[in-house]
Length: 137
Image (tube, rainbow, N blue to C red; front, side, top):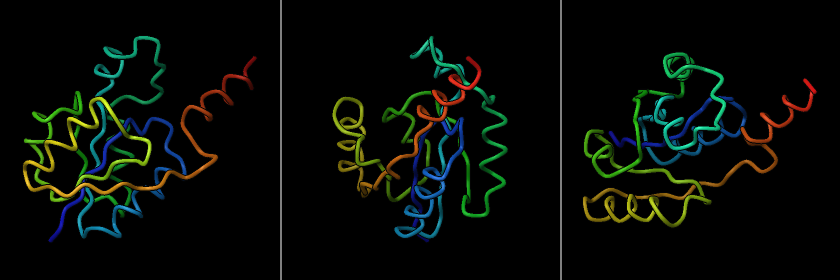
């Protein structure tokens, strides 16, 4: 069985997330979704408005039949990856440079394949948040 790992906040779950998961399943039999812990998000982005708690986001993702396993992570660093049993790491086409280079290098060194997946254009959590805020003003 081949296991693929993808990661994110998944606070405002939308069509782009679902399509990401479907793309992941084209590369592997088993989908692991890593959800960033809410406290960790606020540590790096104090201005962030996280709508759902970590536990709520985990529960929603666990309810999806396409998702086989959900894990929680603090930061996408090699030490986090070492704790997860996976064969392929799914990165978005826009995940380049900085920490993504470090993670990709770690995968290459440890025999993990990296695939780049397409974004669903016109759909993003940032846009959804903006739209919801403009509706309340």
